[in-house]
Amino acid sequence: MAIDWSPFVALVQRHNRFLITTHVRPDPDGLGSMLGLASVLEGMGKTTQMVISSVWPPRYDFLDPARRIGRMVLPGAEFRQADAIIVLDTGTWGQLAEFGDFMKTFAGPKVVIDHHLSQDPLGALALVDTTAEATGRLIFEAAEALGQKLTPAAADFLFAALATDTGWFRHKNTTAPTYALAEKLVRAGANPTRLYELIYEQSTMPRFKLTALVLERLQAVDDGKIAYSQLFRDDYAATGAIPSDTEEMINYPRALAGVEVAMFFMEQPAGGVKVSFRSREKVNVAQVAETFGGGGHRLASGAILPTSMDQAVASVLAAVRARL
Image (cartoon, rainbow, N blue to C red; front, side, top):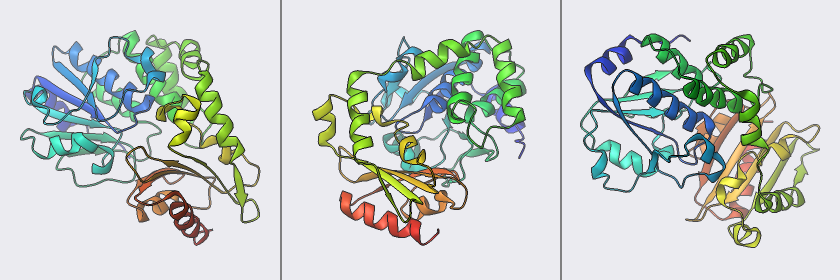
């Protein structure tokens, strides 16, 4: 599903100041795409600001040591001077939180660059390719369309995006073109060994303690076809962990032999329960998530339910069972 980048190229040529954001609870695809695009635009003499509607995840300090990516605090007057907004790695209001409120009152042009199936009408130029394994690929394509060569730092950012959204090249969205892009990024200066160590081999003791709770609560039901685990708000204080330490915990229920659908339930600090879904093949979990106001990919998606933990587990299990 090739994107026609000419409208984006024209927009970039017309404007000079860009405000870039990504989804709440940002991952390396969102953050790396932001930083990579900012590098490309700045190489053209443009000015960029970057902001997220989340607490910064300390695990990814190495991506932005100067902390150029700020936190959106409404009314966001310091961002009103931007000529245009670029939203990366999401196309839904629910994933934009406070930034979404800001964006609704922003008069300038808006662009969405994304690879997720779930999209809301954001009033933006939508550059969406659901066949792309990562938004990082789309930023690489955008750079090519703009005629810009990646710096080694930008190549590092986009490699982090590509590698993590493919599970370090082991998920089903990994294809021959994925490896071809990885080669191009390495040739441009990306350092995969360093990135792997920084992303996957720098865990903290609190994160390990939180992992122990997830494994202790792991359950398999329906003859082992469904597996899930849970975390509660009090678990963070008990272990010293933080919410961003839950990233990739969904991989534990998914790793059980025979599992078709895995879920990970997390009580949210402000109330409600966030659910992450993973599917082997049979169930389109994006459709399941959409019934709860969420969305994502066919085999990986999420939603937030405004209920108690018990109610969330019961509702989600019923919805998954109906599709198995």
